[in-house]
Length: 373
Image (cartoon, rainbow, N blue to C red):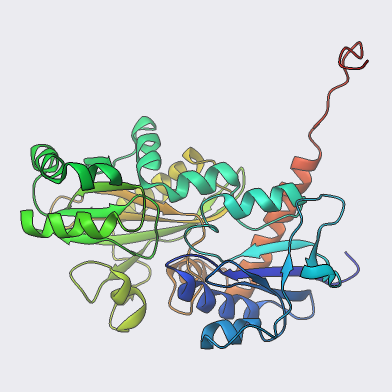
């Protein structure tokens, strides 16, 4: 193009990962080349209001009053492809591509992607199906098992069942798994609502917490003496994997505090692995990416048992963190792709996928107008 691309960086949202999203957006906006991109910041407040101004990110981070920020919305109208001011306000102008960094619910789960599809706006990251599957820890594990990928044993329950028959749920977990186990809401990220249970008392408490965050709860077999290894994947139909990196959490497991708060978690990039193990991890990462029909980017998380070298695929994150300490960009930097060039590549992949989709037929002309009259 002979002009700068207008990139809508979408952040915030109605999610337990709201704060993480704001930090990711700060990094992305700072790294986008101003000579190539005209950045349009689009913040989503905790109560779901869409806001766009130069101050939006700062005000959301400071939790300041939002009354003076102009509200906007994205109409699901492919003829407009722009943000519209609420209450009849002026249009914010056409958007060439969206860069969502809304982690968690209503952003990473396919809902935002569906709106962008209806609006016919190219966007960075997985589509509706890949996003929804990447968010749901239960469904993705079922697909991984079908693909022959190594996953930990697990059981899952509707959260409603925990309220009506908690003893039955505890018994089912203890019949299927052995302590320690990990209890997780099926649809959260950044370890929100996740706990490690070493015994029945901790299990009961963890189940109660997880049920507050999602209508489904998954309980996974803990992998003893495991290293946490992550691999970044980049691409559309022909994805490639980065070098693996290791996370050494400051707490017993990589919980929210260890990820973002205490600043004591360590990373080793590239991870100290044999060539064979590193190659298997990269191959599994690409296979998992394809199994979920991902696009653009994803971070794939593994456990590697220290004694045996056994690999267990934990999960795929379709909108990985882009904070200064986030593994997704750090792994690509170690693989030879610096942060600004990574953002360029992600935007190019979004435009490439959108162009391919627009080339497909969306209408059909029957032989006779059977529907008329």
